[in-house]
Length: 240
Image 1 (cartoon, rainbow, N blue to C red):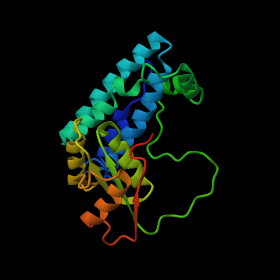
Image 2: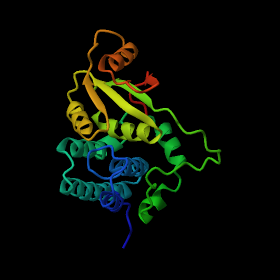
Image 3: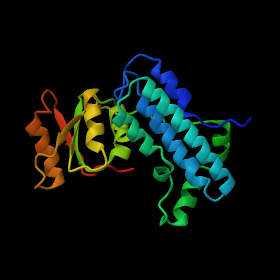
Image 4: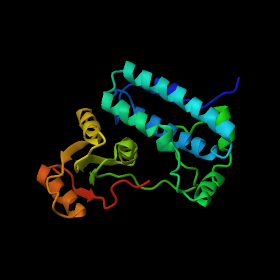
């Protein structure tokens, strides 16, 4: 029987461990990071299989089974519906497939950097959560003073969990996100994340001024920099 990658096993193991670095409020360590790394791998598998319809169909079928199994685990562990919906949207074939107007050269270039994607897919080799890239570089200094991170977004529910996981792993905290008139459920997802202590979610209190100034002003307005020596309003809201 052919082995296929699975988010489910890693997620199940994560859900059995003690709480430490959670982002979505599962009460378990970094379940969202596990899912995010798996989704990143599935994006490669879905994208690079499009030129082989038979393989592409197998990839999509395996993705559907794996996503359903992961959602069942999340549901059984009482993860908020909003967080599960955001995961489902992020793991959908629509979200993982390049846009129809994506130049073929870009797809080919991506797949050329992932030449072993087919073998990894068939052998079930996903990237380990939080794996460090093998760059051969010395370890940099650790962040000794917590740095608050502020941003302002609109309709980024598909990406926000992965974005939060990344910035928490590299040492930022607290993270404050203001939202502008979201229509895709981002507000509900951020409220659930806030309930789990992963983020501070605010409506944009200064929508009339420029985004960069909004972030800094909102941080001061909310008092979110209390006890922190540094605050960083980022100029690019969600970039991947």
